[in-house]
Amino acid sequence: VQTSSGTTQTQSPEEQVRFYLKRSGISETFFDVTAADFVTDQDRLRRLGLTADDASQRALWKKILAGYLEKVSENLKSGVGLTLTGSVGTGKTMMLYIVAAHIVRHCRDYVTVIPERRIFDSIKATYGHGEGEDEGMVIRRFGTTRNLLIDDFGVRKATEWMADIYHSIIDARWDAGLPTFVSSNLPISELSQIYPRQMDRLKKNVAIEMVGGSLRGTELERSMVRTLFRGPLTNQTHS
Image 1 (tube, rainbow, N blue to C red):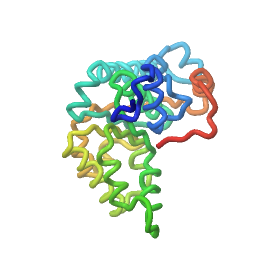
Image 2 (image 1 turned 30 degrees about the horizontal axis):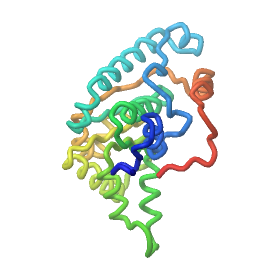
Image 3 (image 1 turned 90 degrees about the vertical axis):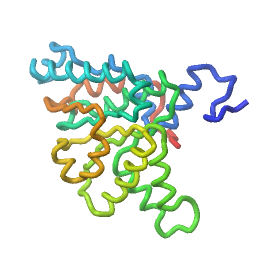
Image 4 (image 1 turned 60 degrees about the horizontal axis):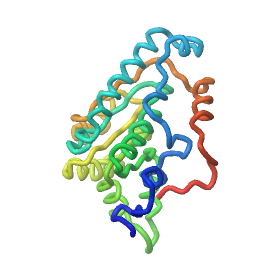
């Protein structure tokens, strides 16, 4: 017997979790990621070129994340997401994956994790086609999905068209009380200048400013992927 969510009553809890994860947009590499994988050990980070202050900052970010996850069900029901901003390589995308996987495992709820470029590419792909989704259908899909996590928010040079698309999506989610999570390399002050209406709708999010040393390209980043790897990265499908 199939449930309304698409899972079956004969599936084990772990099989149901995998069902949600495969439809989340999270790379299979990160299906098992948890907050424990967000490294804050000072000695380990120092060997990778980060300072003691960087380690302290990462510990603070992790503490704020833990506080959010501790009340995740309450936060989601209240439409409260996370706004992660800061420099490259500080772990913003990793943190999005941690939150997404936690929501699936502990709330048995759908999540949609998507980079900004794919939102606009999926809308542009509807132009000139008489069949399949049209622009309005794509916007409604993002505006009504249970939990939307946008990576690299504001990375593209904003246009009036992009601002209107984001306004339609984020405003619909705000009206419905649905949480929207974003990560961006831009500070909140700059995002608020680029997307003032949209950021106003996100102001009740828990904000974490992740400015510090970068782990991009370090052995930690590479080993993290190897440690978390649970299967082939090819032929993955996410719907």
